[in-house]
Image 1: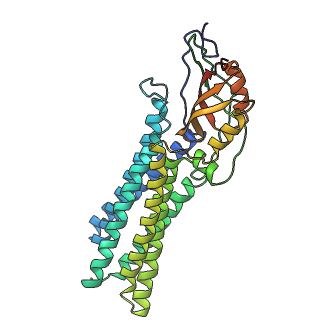
Image 2: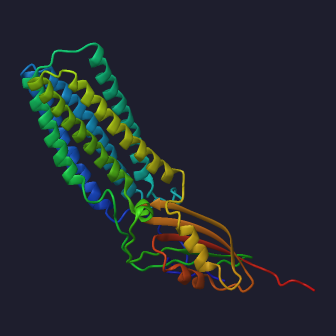
Image 3: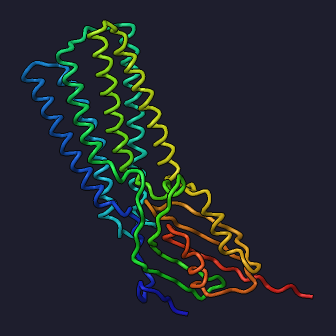
Length: 340
């Protein structure tokens, strides 16, 4: 039996499992890298010229912000350029999740640093130059708000639009294997679907600028209260609140990106739907694995026991109604009739 499918005689096929908005998200991220880099240089150079250590310090902080954005942008570029590299067994779709996990760790470290600095201010209060600190905090808030607007829109939900191509591979062995790549024009909603389609690399970049915006806003509130009401303790209190918010976001992002890296099933219902679809007429799914290989792309390995083996295409068509199944491997094990 020969290999069949759109891939040609060799049976090779693409493992392009990047998100539908990958190219657009990369352009957005590079734009934010440019914006934060310019702001970083303006603050460091301006602070040096006008002898403002606060401005220089905020410029150095902005450099870490630019570094995280650069990490996200490079992850997009590397994943796109190496999408066809056969050394990656199932493509480079999870590279963004790795970048997101790294960004989340950096964000967690950032929250610890803010918390430590805030606590130290309780025991060793420092004189605050409100005329310099408030404008810098406002400037940081504006830059982060603009960055958040640039990155908004694709971090939570994206849809996998398709091209309707399939690749089947039949092998002359005891088992039949069906590798199916499909993209569907369906839109799923809800938390489970969001976990399947979400671009965690973009989400990490967005959460980072959102965290910076939140901290800047809290700092402004604390500084204004300290200046006009004499509540100097409000500055470190707002710092602790900001640290707690950032830490909470970081933990959530670590859990979400880590789940993808550990190949956890992103949709708790997809396994049940696969079993319901295939377990008919006495057929039994004896083994099932589902994991995410990229935003909007799920890989599936199915072991099916049946008394009436069918061609791989028939199982493929049964599963076609389930969106997001981009790489399907089916192993069919015939059940021998009982001997009397």
